[in-house]
Image 1 (cartoon, helix red, strand yellow):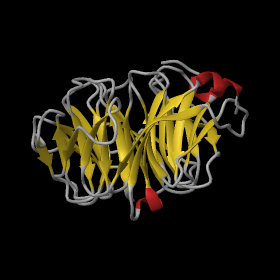
Image 2 (cartoon, rainbow, N blue to C red):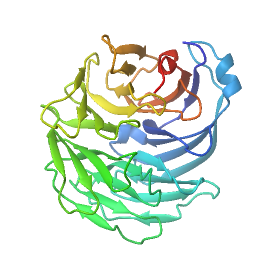
Image 3 (tube, rainbow, N blue to C red):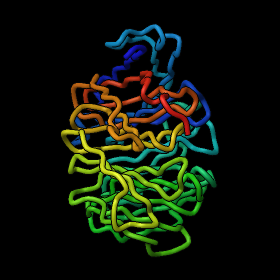
Length: 330
């Protein structure tokens, strides 16, 4: 694989990585010291030099990714989400239950801080349609709805019976989101209702990862401790539409491509990122094995088809061009 860039998140283990929806060469990495068990967190706002990426060799090179801003927190950071409304704002979720909103044009301190969750917050996701709100999912078994200007959460849901690992807005509806939990289920929600709209018994193990298909509003993808990835039609929750096998350990994150309704990428404790074509007879089309520890974060560029970023517990961020990501269109 040509064109691999690396960045060393020195002293901090990567948990999540997200491309900016506004700037083609900006990414953010949420990280934690000491593998997130104890210690500080750090938000890295990174710039990508795409010319350097084109020149980098297959083993990866330094110098093409630079730290534009760094923000330290008292506890580990487990997720981050760029604002869909304000180009310089990003929200983070933390091991101490706090949610922080940052402006990357400012130094040092968050512009807002919320402290309602009582346990680790492993997920934060910004509304893609309405663009004015975000949701969080926590180990305290609650989901909360927030707006940046509001001093408190607007809504709290509590149905899951175990830690919540992922909350993701539908890309087609500003009122619909999905959640994934250690109780082996995924749930579909409408923000106007107090109870979930449907429940999917997704795996016979903890569900760590979930994303929504960008081209089909009825399709979600889940990943689990059972090593598998599954696709679902939420209208028919009794059975998955596809099972993707190949990871050797738990699947920590899945992302659906912004360029194709059939392409999914996944990050796993088996130290790999994998690319899948859910429409193909042999769906696993690429294995990215440039990390030496658990891979927890992965995202795909909206601006450059085939460009993917990963972060891992080996204190490495990689940005690479994966030809398999660009082999088919919508």
